Length: 260
Ligand SMILES: Nc1ncnc2c1ncn2[C@@H]1O[C@H](COP(=O)(O)OP(=O)(O)O)[C@@H](O)[C@H]1O
Ligand SMILES: [Mg+2]
Image (cartoon, rainbow, N blue to C red):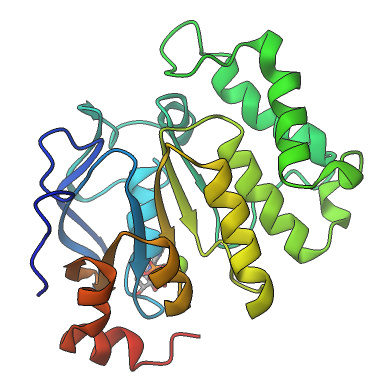
């Protein structure tokens, strides 16, 4: 086990804290006593073979799945009892391994729906300055930034797969989150395009705490400042990318395995 870095993992004011988090599906242990503290503005890579528990972790942080036990807090506020929409309103958003879009709505309308979730609650308890009046502007800025302008009126169901992935990430970012979780943002994308997409996303996410699932270790090494390695629902290594990627257990369970 790679030693956790005091500067990041044990920061006195972490933005995201998971404590003793467990989750099973029948006999399958998808999360086994996960303990993670993430400092604000960290960029964290989540690695692990298929079935290691990466998506389960993201699902539990974002309200899509309840842990069997344990606590997940953002800025001290307990998230585990909340619905996904409430988690988003508190500033924690995510993208999906398989894009979750409203296929009959246009690209612009998909972004407006996402913004609406936060803008509708902005006066009550959302962190951001998004208001219903700002929703259109925020949407158009995101269309421009992600180069989606030429697709703006196209139904999401008719988009090429790569554009669907990008729109899904854009929907997670347009709500101006404090914590952004990206589940395999570059999967299904050619090796050449991966860096361009990550540059775009990381540029748009400046100042945001980002956790991203990635199988390509070149991408992990380039963008992550910290890496969490998952195997069989456990975190087997946590630290700086170079140290984690050199760890014997990680090489055996993560890098040595078929993780395509
Ligand atoms: N909804 C579910 N029902 C049953 N088993 C699940 C469910 N979600 C995940 N699992 C199981 O939990 C384990 C971890 O899955 P997952 O978190 O999707 O892994 P990863 O994202 O690292 O590939 C796997 O064994 C998977 O089959
Ligand atoms: Mg997954």
